[in-house]
Length: 85
Image (cartoon, rainbow, N blue to C red; front, side, top):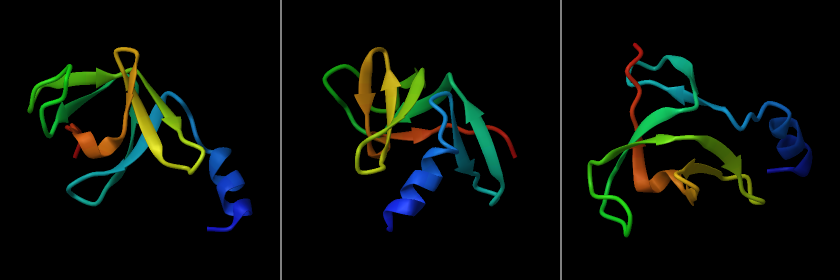
């Protein structure tokens, strides 16, 4: 991806929300805090445990990370729970 696209993307980034495509192909915004369910056991959380994301962030490579209780996680560790249709 060209650098100018990354810079353009960052102007739409917010540490308090993410854009999600629902199961019904609808684009919605989720504002922090929003619930997630862990896919696997970690040192702090058990599989299927529901916790709340307090903040979102971007790594230098442009990947999203999520802050849960003062610890950052990549989204591969959990499912975002989205109840809107």
